[in-house]
Length: 336
Image (cartoon, rainbow, N blue to C red; front, side, top):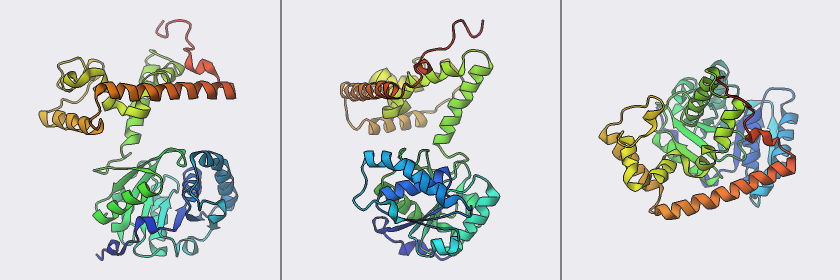
């Protein structure tokens, strides 16, 4: 197999991005890339695709203007073609966002890989399909990855970068640098698993919420309150591990995962961690806090929370948003 990734264009030198599929995710990708000052060549076979795409970009543009547009950013740099071959013949990168159905993606991946230059990397926005499965139909599969975003793509920075069995190391390095340079926060997933990482976290929370509702312990509104007025606020800045680190303190953080100090196993089954697992978690936390003391971390957290709470109050007032959303709708015990 010839490795064409050796001649890759530098990520910073990319000028034209091909967007394949212009639904909710594809149109949001197009808006993001346009805001970064890139040319976007979009393609979709639907007869209404171009009109819907331009409308979606117009909707996203005010938010992107608030965040700050690149000097070269312009909606006039969007081009559309219903023909995938003509659309992609001169692009420097492809972001595929077609429906989450394997038979559709098989056909589209085959078409993309035969329409582009051999050195162009293909990223799929798939939220759950592993890249090895998608590579089966790709010419030069070493240049194919998953680049999974979160909706709305033009605002949420995360992109999960996942390689398949045939993906080259050069492709992964390139993709990480590409997304980083063009305004995203790329996360390299070390191993491909269905659902990648962030969706599995979402599913774990959603599954437990459904269990609690089904078992009669809470209403949906109760559980949304539990997230939006509780841990969700802290997670937005610190994440789960660092939040636990701050709550436990330096000495007790290790004890939590060794089962010596309460811990998550009090509420539901959790895996038994060996010494290597615990050491890895502690080392990762030390790296994440970047040498900041607990006192400094608390100041960072508190400043962030004040800003978020003030912003939420402002948005609620501006739009007369239903404040009962943040107040339990139960007047008596759900369990009765």
